[in-house]
Image 1 (cartoon, one colour):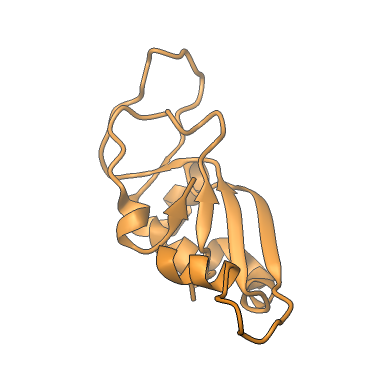
Image 2: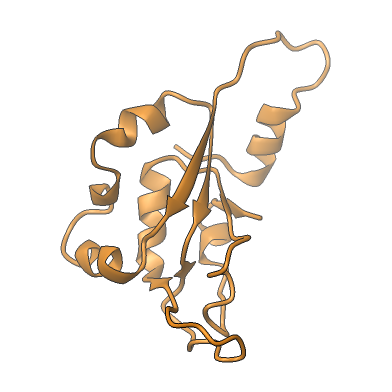
Length: 130
């Protein structure tokens, strides 16, 4: 499964004297849990979007992805920046990230400010964001 922030830092920067071992990182591109995927996840289990890729996630030490939506049950579209699409996924769908063991997500994309109100659902569930 995923790691907490302190465990992730520990995994990346082990104190001197610890045995050196190769670490495997998985960097995943755009992960979309909004729009139609959000609708499907209301009926299907949180594992569904990963299909047959979970063994790849399980075979590494650290998993980082680019999250292409806001995860929140609250918020209204932020209209200061005109956009055609405002991607949002239900807060319960953070479990989809947890099932894949995602340690951290990048929010540095054009959907980070889709909603005005951004509760920190991911942090409360142990998924770091940057």
